[in-house]
Amino acid sequence: MIEHAGRGILLDVEGTTSSASFVYDVMFPFVRRELDRFLAERWESPDVESALNRLALDAGADSLPSWCSGLSPDECCARVRDEVHRLMDSDAKTTGLKQLQGLIWQAGFESGELKAHVYDDVPHALRSWNEHGREVRVYSSGSTLAQRLFFGHTSHGNLLNHFSGHYDTTIGPKKESASYSRIAADWGLAPSEILFASDVVAELDAARAAGMQTALCLRPGNAPVAPGHGHPAIQSLADIALMQSH
Image (cartoon, rainbow, N blue to C red; front, top):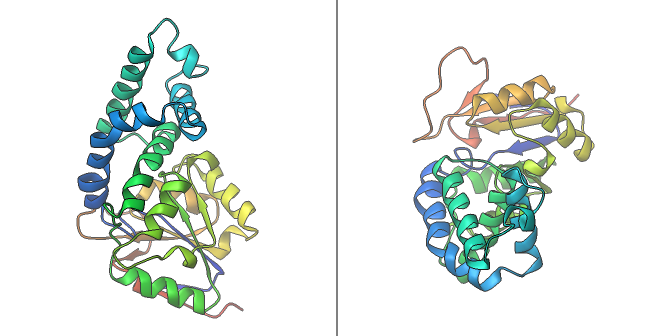
């Protein structure tokens, strides 16, 4: 059990509120299955164009047109498809990939085919924190669109109303302390008022360097963590005890 007297709780998703296996065994295969059809149907829509331009920027080009210069439309589509598969194979956290994945997942969540897994302790913790005046926000490598879809369509129903904000890598990489400083500034809270919960020690190190409190999530199936990291560990969000601030 760890104690938190601050006003804000910032949550990671994969390995914290949801199992890593759901992301890798359900959500990623859905993207691979739907990618070709999605690109064929939505290529010229503004939100997809924005994601594809960011994908090109992440690949080192100035834009999608410059990345596909000299290629036919079919060849450009194939380049995008190959890059998406390459990034997913390496579990990359690039912004363009995450934007595109979020758009593909949208159809799956809205049709009911995808229903997000969340641990059984999550809904109660969110309700309890809200009832005690705590604000809860999400910081994930998944796009803010994907986050809203995820928590709006869970195995425990729509949990979206429990969150007051969402952050993705457009605010900065999750392993850099400056990202957490920007989140605190955007939130209007001192970093010390915020507890960040994640299963990744490097992310917690960055949050702690920015002045946040931290909690290491030890969920079933998470990657093993070497000793000596110095972060308080929890096995459930119920292990976070709210204290009265002074």
